[in-house]
Image (cartoon, rainbow, N blue to C red; front, side):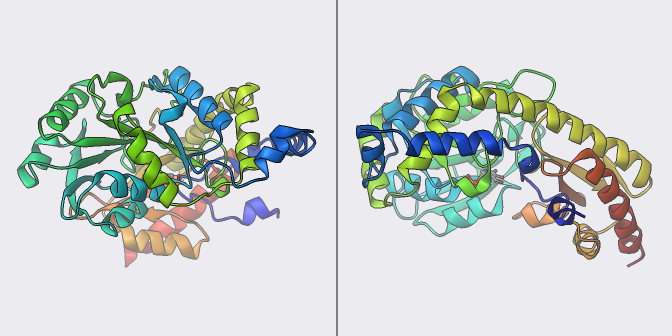
Length: 373
Ligand SMILES: Cc1ncc(COP(=O)(O)O)c(C=O)c1O
């Protein structure tokens, strides 16, 4: 049995590490270190806290082409990932006691990062079209910040409708709020073209766009970015400097090379095909091994699916799954105030179709036990 076989299957949001082009990455690292002259020496110093200028330019170019985000390199700030980005946004733009709308359910580390700031977090439910703007206004009529995952709601998976995007932009304009658009896996549409970001629809300069290489490359890289409207680029630069220098400039230049040389685009294309195949394997295996226990519906995006449980408590199901060495998270663990039907969040990104079939059979055994509890 290989190490990959031993890894706990279904960990949500882990990408296909088994398909990462390690040899190519190693060559790009060697290329960076073998550069002679100013660029190598420059990358060995303290560097710019906002990020290396070449990486900022490469990101601006990529998000423009792939995600419809309109920006210049000076609006792009390199960070350590989502929590680091949220902390800086709050430091730059939120006063003590101001409120932040946060989707419910959502990614708990994001909520925790915001709850630790001077702001007051207001949980806003989502419906089939995305964040429920009317419910948000009823709970907190003048938010300063609105956090959303419009391309692929985490963890429920729907895409925010165009009507809701317009309503959200309008509500933000009226209350003079910033929209924080977390586009953590927006490039992963399996069959249809990716839907452009809200940032590109914003004529008012109030969308802050968050990206991450955790899903598109690998999470250990700890590389994310914030793209701010030009009006707050200076303010944000000060907040970014306070948060300290993070990722090594050498690594930043390797990522810049990976993007500029066209490898990133090819990698995303390959990953899209792999995730489509992995999701199909999960849906097929679930129909075979989870019949009468859970339903896994096909979706067109991302790296995780929901298994809706049939009269089984999701916490008990998750615990029994852990006993089978599976990391199947209970949907209720992502909920704040909302109560949703019982479900498991199954990440299929990091598991091969063969492993998915074995793991789904094991999940069936776990669900049989959980049902008897
Ligand atoms: C909703 C959401 N946003 C962002 C991220 C990425 O976080 P980070 O950039 O800190 O790795 C994740 C990772 O799972 C996520 O689920």
